[in-house]
Image 1 (spheres, rainbow, N blue to C red):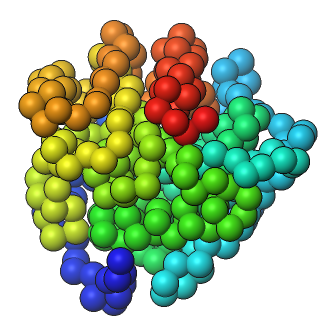
Image 2: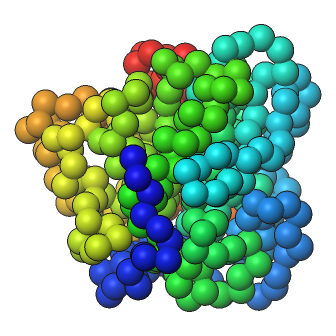
Length: 305
């Protein structure tokens, strides 16, 4: 796939801004971050840590014992892009899971998700998918984040995920056992990648937006590509998510059924957006743990494990 030159990327349209605003309002409807965290690597680490104090009683930290984990560089056609990769220290080849970031980049929670998957025997890798458009790690306001992310073309993201899958296959991963999971912004991308990649075995989308306005950079949304899905997708959603109305969930289920595609959407009643994000007050331990168990079962059922 030929990647568009970032210099040729059109400016974000009103539709792009509206779509990003919906994601951001779901995440933090009343919050304004107040400080900047240190950037620890070339991956984004600061913004999500700055958004709320980490709650010691809920935040999960997965160690690297028995793992090979750290930053790698993925060779995309036009440049290297940073990624965080975790895999078992011994053995292989390992099934591969692409982990797609929240809107705030590859921060510590996303890295921890990679380590959790590695503990289950996967090679999990999270590429920084808007490194060309800007670094969101130290940004202080929602508007600053929106200005960067609204410029990211879906076509660029699909190509970068293809490059990341290829990198994983050369780094101890099994190219024939490929899965993807993503959160919020990455949940929408998970649906799109399932319609893009013929190599994908299964996807799990966590509270990814299903519908929105079309634009040059985001021409289609999950509800538009249900008939094009090439792999089974499990959607995990919160019943109290203000940014993803129940009618869009129902419409996505209907679109998958009409197209004869394997999709399952689970709605956790009373759960807000970002219920898996254990570093934020939105975290709900019950739905998060149940969703994680469903993710592992979905990958096993559909040939990733």
